Image 1: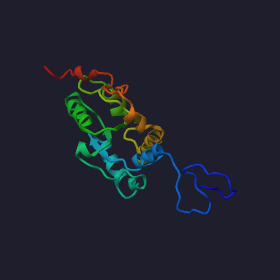
Image 2 (image 1 turned 90 degrees about the vertical axis):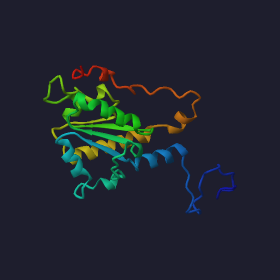
Image 3 (image 1 turned 45 degrees about the horizontal axis):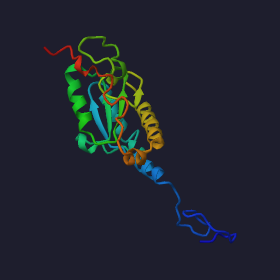
Image 4 (image 1 turned 180 degrees about the vertical axis):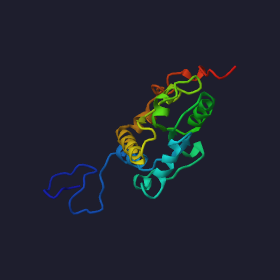
Length: 193
């Protein structure tokens, strides 16, 4: 191949006279597809669930960011949105949903109750979802506005854009992800006898 100047052209480089040519790295193409096709699993546990529904609705239109396909089967989702107060009674079900999701998977803790337990400093409330799940993005507010949650989705998309899925797949021994178990307090569960 020759360039316009007559010298050899790099493989994959596009000339100005080739309008249909696209040159990119495979990792960038994979990450572009993954970040623009998030399928959220809504786990609306309390009042934050109403704001989560508003975010998917036509006024805020989450479809602009490729995340409108809310699925209620964990095997079809890659984004878990924990919206609201998580109790220890529900913690095991929440962890089971997370475990059933295919890799790669991400978690958003929506609202102050799921991020830190909120105003419920009680034995029955999990003081932060990060004690049982690895959380990627925290959304502050009680309840957070839908535009705040959309900002969290944009931050998650930036995080996905920086990942290297090919290296993770091609490594000989896939290393265990750091923080995959959260802080390990699922065994705490004060409600069980």
